[in-house]
Length: 168
Image 1: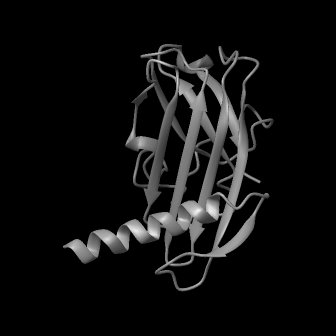
Image 2 (image 1 turned 180 degrees about the vertical axis):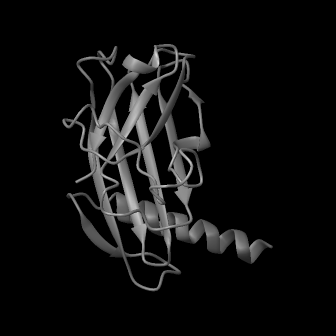
């Protein structure tokens, strides 16, 4: 069991290192993978139509050749103690407010594991208005997984997109 945990931690560390390398899309070899990983990232910016105000942060996506996708989000400027959801979208932030969730199987369910929802669902901002969440999907996200959107669950569904990061 100890070896399994250290191997899993090593894979996560390798992916995290790949994420921290900087630049737009880049390639890095992740430990335990059968080839290179593709890393995309972007800055989180508020949506003008939402109540995003001073929200900022960044999102990263690592597509591992071994067959998984890791998405992480660091966000600040949230309402402390409020509940949010964040997931991968299939349109850039500027196209219809990133309209449309990314689905691994387009005809499949609009929930995990077919969609990539960070934290697996809702998360709560800490007392400083900060949240750090991630998701690991057991598939390689397709080319149309291009943005990460933060939704404020206290707002109506027609206006709850408060921030977005294009993954480029």
